[in-house]
Image (cartoon, rainbow, N blue to C red; front, side):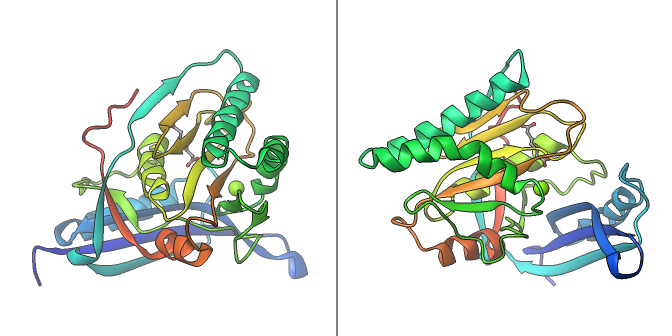
Length: 264
Ligand code: PML
Ligand code: MG
């Protein structure tokens, strides 16, 4: 035992829906943390509480996984700087997000006008394709191909938390979780930008993020009550291989220093 040891905690809760052949598990809630040894028990209890009190319903299954993580395997990243964009309507917000992502792609690839144009037209359609997915779409801007090994599931960024956040926090804070995820994702090999609309029907704020743009919060990106949301990771296969990008997103342990990032 040493002070340097951290633990990764992951919780997912689901509910069984349907009958007979149609029976399937529906995701209710999930959470993950990387905390020091002393906080493991309390954070675990808070996660279970979160699963048991979720507005989506009572869970039939709760899975909690606790793994030791060595400090030397953890990468520490500075949080992306945050800017906030207020918009009148969600349509305006969505357009703005498409525009920012479009520009990020153009900057990365000035020479392929044809691909850039077709990409801009494709964005709304790509976003719709993410709605049923639990994970994110990994879209290659160089070829226009989707690179997730499983298109239905998508790719999930995992093993991350805010640095020094051993406090116990039972309720979900969309922004705090998103800035951590977006910072990890922006630092992935070959990553160009991320586009996110929340799938929480009561949460209309989304964002666009990259190392160059920082984290741009767009306060309205969908209609209140709409449960459709998703994430697109825009990736450039000329800069890195899909395998190394996915390996980083799904396996590399990251702690994000959010101290300089003021909530705006
Ligand atoms: C989600 O986890 O539902 C996405 C959260 C997006 C957070 C946007 C923000 O508030 O900055
Ligand atoms: Mg989804």
